[in-house]
Image 1: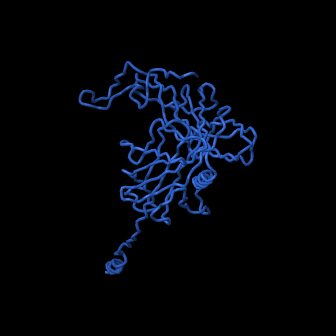
Image 2: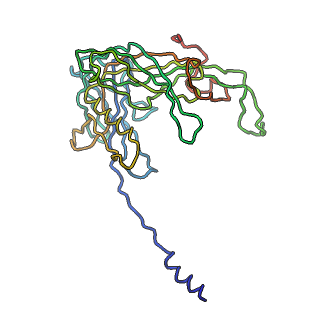
Image 3: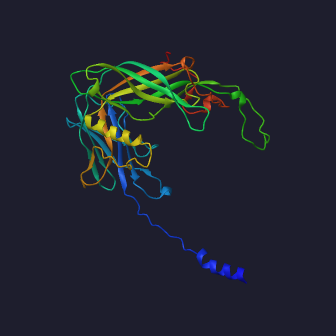
Length: 352
């Protein structure tokens, strides 16, 4: 009886109603990402809406579709951008469009709902040529892992002009590399005709050239405050070694772009925020406003930045035999031609 009484006394304590917290849906902020340069287009302006917070099941980024997007220069010339039907929310300039040094450009956007946005003018300044492009190997220890992460850091040599204050932005371009696979190890998925998954080697092909648009892992920018008028070397990009890219010869590409002082300040703030270590002493993330404003509501927060600049491009060939450290080669048991952006034909401009 005493045990029964004790259990009956505990029952009210076990029946606790859950406390439901209702979190207000975050404001969907328009985000603009755009860069035009003196290289021939198409150049891309990306429009999306980002939630400051809200349900993780609703997604945090949504493309903004069917907008009217134009670029206007200081002479009054207008260029209309067309939406990419495969990558909705991406708006492309015509193929031959390129910015001109000395001109200023303004991005103008009208959404289907009628809201109108504009950027502040961005003036295109000249950019020095890349005098030389070299590389070094970077190893990144990983806690609990026997093998370090690693990659290639691209380094540019530049002769900075003394007659102007320069602001630099670097981005990696399209890489082309020799791709090695093992079609002799091909094993199809189990099927009625091959229930035991017996290997079915393919006759071809184990060597292809693959192209890949590799985004910089990090933001690489510089101001010439400390080297105005001098020759200097600056880290300009990083390409991670995934066991495939540097198995043989790899051709990397780097773009050196002049940007405005305000664009540099914007990217520097973004860089500082993305490099926060994540400790409890770090400041909370903040929305960094760029150069886009709403003509309907000047108080509306619009994220992102529209940039315009001159661009200098340089390539470098990297031979795996000359690298002091590489990742173990990844085994791909298939015909190399089934992978995206591959060809067995040697590119016409391949000249290692």
